[in-house]
Every structure is written in structure tokens, then in C-alpha cells.
Length: 248
Ligand code: ATP
Ligand code: MG
Image (cartoon, rainbow, N blue to C red):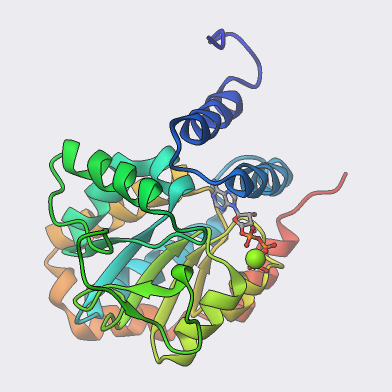
């Protein structure tokens, strides 16, 4: 048990969740290393959602509302840290959820499927009992694609994605929204929209934005949504995210 009074309580709590996910068998060992890299960048941006990340979240939500077939991709880290938040976002934006694992094993897929179902999300895509396709150029277990999900998706949210896969997905004509604390990663550079923020903070923020748009009837206002997307430049946003890193 981590005492609540510990000055690094929040951070240690997340670390604990990731460690437990590894022990429970649904997170690969390298998922823990990826988390460590994320922690470093989070420390450097002050462990807060920057205004720059908020702008990216707005553009991301607008892009999802404009999509025909939006899919939220989940892996071990995302499941460990933000399973409930992802389900809320899917509900708020009418998106599908699909399991995509870099180190795919039947066991990991099984556990993650079960976790989503236990929370009432039955239609989890990318499972073991589905006949899966493969995304072009990546004929490996990490390139599985559900026919009704990522294979045909026009917009995908990919938290903690790998650069190679992000590139292939973009080459396949998809709009890719990455969540990645490292603004220098290949994923961050390759993606259509990159949210440089911790998955635990920005996913609930996206849901909040989506519900706000809906309340105002703007989720179906194409002109409004397109203007948000048109005003957004990922290159500029990444530059600002990099500038948010304080080294002194
Ligand atoms: P790339 O393949 O894109 O060049 P990489 O190989 O350096 O990146 P990966 O291990 O493939 O990195 O991906 C992990 C990424 O996820 C890292 O960039 C890390 O900063 C980020 N990350 C880790 N934890 C979180 C988190 N909780 N929220 C958001 N991003 C995170
Ligand atoms: Mg990588």
C-alpha cells in the first residue's frame, strides 16, 4: 500500500497499476519500460495537461465526431491505467474499442477481453474468437485488425503506439490520433494529431469535451468540427509541446 501522504502518491499509484498488470499477465515486460519513459516526460511537463495538449484534445474529438468508423485502440498499458475512462470516451463518441497488442499472446488478449466484458463492454473487437485481418505491410501478430474495427476504421485513437505501426496505419489512409508523452517519438511525428499528455488525464478530458459538444448540439455540426480541425497544426502543436518541457 502506498500511503496517501506520499509526495509522489499519484505517480506511484500509476506505477503500481502497471506492475500489477504485468503480474496479472496482460502487460508485456516492455510495457513497464514504456511506462518508465512516459513517467520521465510527464515529470518534465509538470504532470499536468498543458494548454497545448488541450488544443490537441479538441481537434481529436472533432476528428472523431467527423469520422465514419472511429476506433479506440487499447493495449496493456491503456487497459491498466484507463480502462473505465476509455469505455466512457467510447460511449460519449460512439466509437468502437479494439484490442491491439504489440506483443500479442492469446492469454493477454483473453484477460483484456474479460476485463472489458466485466465492465459491461461486450463488443470488444480484436479478440481471440474473431477472424482477424492483417494491416498491410505488417504481417505479424502485432498487426491484427478487426474487420469491422481497425481494418476499415477511418479514424483511430492509439494511446502509447509504436512508431512503425503508426506509420503503416497512416499509409493505409487512416487519421491517427496518438496519445504519447514523448513529443519526439516517431509515433508523435507520424500521427495526424498527437496529444502529448498522460493517458490518465487526457482521455477523461476528451470525454468532457465530447459531452460539451453534444450538449450544444455541435457534435453533428460539420462546419464547426471542420473549422477546429482546419485550425490545428500537428507540427506547431508538437513544437509547443516540446517548449513546455522545462529543463531548469
Ligand atoms: P516510437 O516507436 O514512437 O519512436 P518508442 O519506441 O520510443 O517510440 P514505445 O516504447 O514504442 O516508444 O512507446 C511508448 C511510448 O508511450 C513512449 O513514447 C512513452 O513516452 C509513451 N507513454 C508511456 N506511458 C504513457 C502514458 N501513461 N501516457 C501517455 N504516453 C505514455
Ligand atoms: Mg517504438
